[in-house]
Image 1 (cartoon, rainbow, N blue to C red):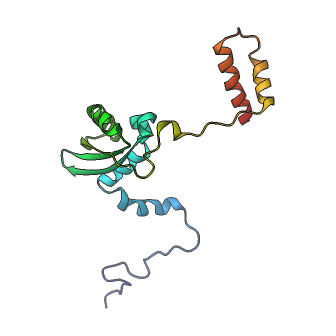
Image 2 (image 1 turned 135 degrees about the vertical axis):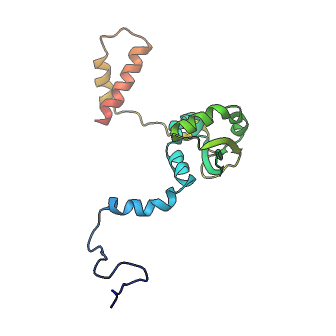
Image 3 (image 1 turned 90 degrees about the vertical axis):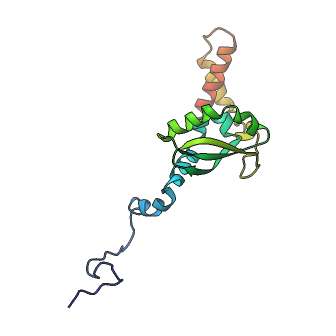
Length: 171
């Protein structure tokens, strides 16, 4: 008699393995992420994660990759850009395509399309990208000033004192 299986065309019940107890997330990660990473979705996900590295922090603060679609010879990447940045970036398209393809390691993008939509946080101005840091405590400032006391007066000494105060405050 033929072996019975739990599912049609599956493994016999004795050969199936079931997880009992906690499992390492690394064992499940590939199974969970594989559908999202198929085809161009993986390239878009990778690009979205590394966007500031690829285009620089100033451009990344007002843009975001949205869609990657297209044919065999490279697709079209749609980039959301706030306000007039879409027009300005269209002049940089060849350079951006080069950076994007170099980052992905293949010619995944042949054309850029800019969408001047203000959604998903892209509308924030560059100045609002980071909140101003809190001033360091007075004790950190005085320690940093003592450390640079032997330097000649000037902008370098002041900059080093400010940097030193922030470093001391983080310890």
